[in-house]
Length: 212
Image (cartoon, rainbow, N blue to C red; front, side, top):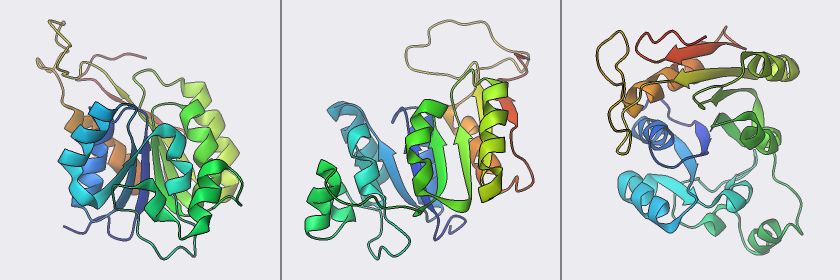
């Protein structure tokens, strides 16, 4: 499947659950992906799930792993340093070199503070999708208005009642079952790639729980 071929995406926040589900669908669709992982265990799990089709890096290394418009190197690979040639790698990682801008089409982040440092790397006409359970609608609309002049759409999914290994017994929503991270990923990707005249929106993915 090549639905997301030639797309370059960054998924930041949690490498497990929803973030990993988004990265998997992007990779399956042919996208180049950078995914952040906070711990060695998270990184090993993500690499095992995604293989060589994505680069899995620590949050502090994500900006160094992003290509610019003229970068010839593809994103996939296990080593963040493979994203930039020669001495540019060391300069970017240490902060001594020039920043690399405008190389990403899609940005998925758990919250606005996580997304904001990466916005200069997002191409005009790109998309941001926030994935935290309780994104503030006013904050989503404010960021959407801020980035509208660049043609960047900003939307959010609001997951609720999503099954997780440590979720335990929880009340079921009206649909009568817990949701899956994969279902949140599909909603997030819809907002990022298909809802082309939608910005500033918050989409509940909670089985009808109806949280405002």
